Image (cartoon, rainbow, N blue to C red; front, top):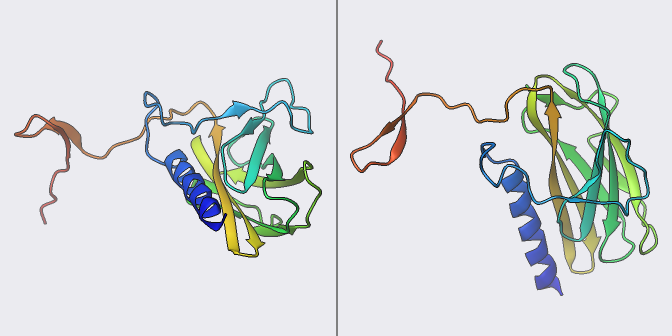
Amino acid sequence: MNRVLKCVSMVALALAMNACGNATEGDAAVDAPAVTAPQLSFTPAADSSATAKPSGPVIISYRIIGSPIVGQPVAIELEFESTIGPQLMHISYRVNDATALQLPETQLASVSMAPFQDHERGSQQVTVIPLREGRLYLNVAVSIEGENGSVSSVTAIPIQVGGASRETQFNGEPRLDENGETVISLPAKED
């Protein structure tokens, strides 16, 4: 059982890392596989969608409330469903790029959620402030202490702010090397 939980946690971490990668819009890996989650206990607004991503011991579902605007707080409704039964959950929120997204001073970076009954979902609302346009990410990690140690689920919530391109910006110029492969050429600075 412990091996299975570790394996599931590692797969969830790999999916979260993939969601934060430098994929371009044409790549299939821009968004982690997502499914519409009509079974959520809240009703999405007509202009938004509820999403659930594959995860480990906790299924993390989310819904962005409203349209994210630079400099304006945006709320994200989160729901958590334990796949291993009622347990105390420790939830933490993290922003990798502080120049793109921030948690307001009133938003806790971590909280604990009391156990709830099987097939019930716990919910939290987190607020973030986008600082620029583009595709921004809020990382959500949920850990559960069990008899065999701690297990975690991690997901990166994509937040599209404005109409800015999702394409990766490269420094330098793409060129072909002697083997015919595309490389990025960065000019050297002379002093």
